Image (spheres, helix red, strand yellow):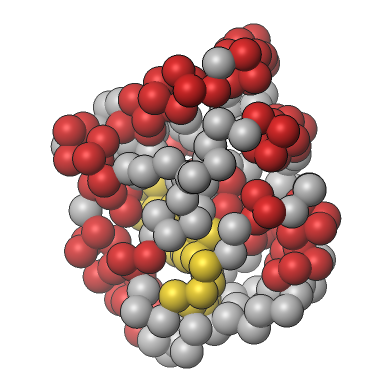
Length: 224
C-alpha cells in the first residue's frame, strides 16, 4: 500500500518521510496554485494519506474535488480556517506575510521558532525541522500563503469518506488546537487526538507515538 505524504508550508517535501516505509512525496509548491496541485494529485492513487498543516488542508480540498480517495487519512495540525475565528488574527497574518515577503531568510528561522514554541521538547523539535530548498523563493511560496489566508474548509460532504485521524498539539502556536476541534466537527468519520505539551509538529515531538496512533486507528477501522 502506498502512503502519500503532504508537508507544511516552506517545509521539505520529505518532512514526514520517517512516518511511512512506502512513502510517496508530493511537492505541491512546484505548482502555481492549489487547483493545479489538485490536478497533479489525481495521478496518484494512495491507500493512505498523512498530511501536515497546509498539506492537510490541500488533502481535504483534493478529496472534496474527487482527486484523492484514500482508505485512511491522517491530519497533523491541519487548519479548518487558518486566519480568523479560532485561527490567526488578520493583523498577525498580515505582519507575518509582509515579513516573509521582505526578508524570507530571517522569517524562515523565526517560523521554525513558532513551530516549536510551546512544545515540551522544543530543542528536539527544532533539531528535527528542516527547510524546503526553495524556502527563500518568495514567488514560489507567497501565493500559497495568500491562499491559506483566504481558504476555509466547510465541506463535510467529501467525495471520499475514509476514517480520519486528527492529531493536534494543545500548545500549537500556529494552528491553535481549537482548529482541530473545529475540523473534527466538520469531518465525517473523524477522531481527534489531542497531545498535551505539544506544539505545531507532533511528528517531530514523538514520531513513535504518532506512528503507533496511526497504526492503531487504521487497525480499528480495518485499513491497516
